[in-house]
Image 1 (cartoon, rainbow, N blue to C red):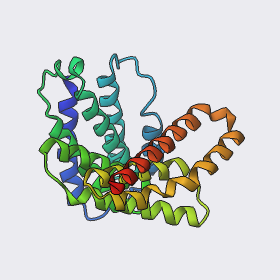
Image 2 (cartoon, helix red, strand yellow):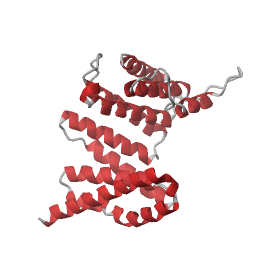
Image 3 (cartoon, helix red, strand yellow):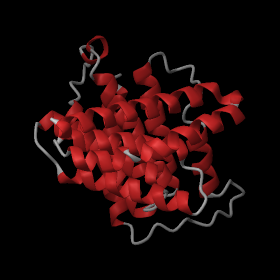
Image 4 (spheres, rainbow, N blue to C red):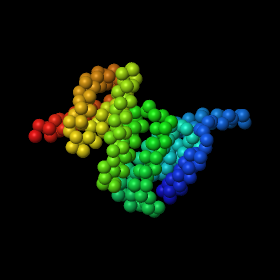
Length: 253
């Protein structure tokens, strides 16, 4: 666990160095080694692999952070790597919330600090991959967690979820399969609006789930080999429908 703080410090120092670079161009490799983009891709693809030195979930998350940080070192403008680094940090924050793990934190790493770094990663990712709907959904989640820590509202949350919603809507219209990702955004966006007592706004967003439920049932029959993914998607849809009913009942009062 003690290595996590070192990784976060490395991240901050390297981020500052990358900001000072004039461009994010990739160097041309003439030494026979793999190109920088290929090395970065390998680091990202192996980040979730089993590591003999990772004995706990915290160690595993630290290893993932290091993989993505090294990938960014090879390709500073790799938006996907910034996104994945932000996700690893967001998951690390969630782990810190469990007493059995959080209380054994020898470095006294503050969850709020981890969230701020996660958000910084997501913001950097949006500069390089501005049309990734999943990215904005995850940014919204991180901002919401930070808002809960500080007990204050943040307009950036709604903006992030709205951007994710718009991107997924456009992608779906042109034929991209964004099913489960879009439904996660619908649920998260609707839930956020309902927490703000904007039940009418939540209903406008959540009503999109009705037509998607039938489509999901049809697709699940065609992809029986992915039962876990289908079950997860069905749960998201059911949660969204339940929230839609709740919002409707609040307006009816």
